[in-house]
Image (cartoon, rainbow, N blue to C red; front, side):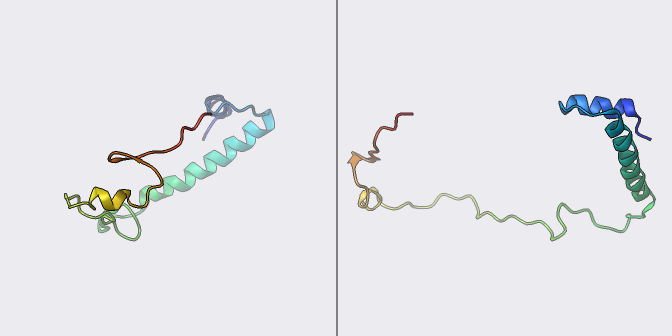
Length: 94
C-alpha cells in the first residue's frame, strides 16, 4: 500500500500542494493501481515475442546515402534575393 507520507513526497517532487483528504484518496487510488499492475506478474508471457509497438516496428526513414543534389543555380532561381551561393534574407530584430 502507498502511504500518505509517500503521497506527500510525490506531491512535493511534483511541486503541488495537496490536502489531507487528497493525500488519503491518492494513497488509496495509487495502491489500487499498483495492485492491478501486480496482477500482471502472474501472466505467462514466455511464448510472447518481445516488441516495441503493437503494430510491429520498422524503420520509416529512407536509407542514409549520399545522392546528387540540385544544381545551385536551380536552387537559387526562385530566391527573391541572393548573395553568391546563399539565400539573402532580411534582418529580423526581436
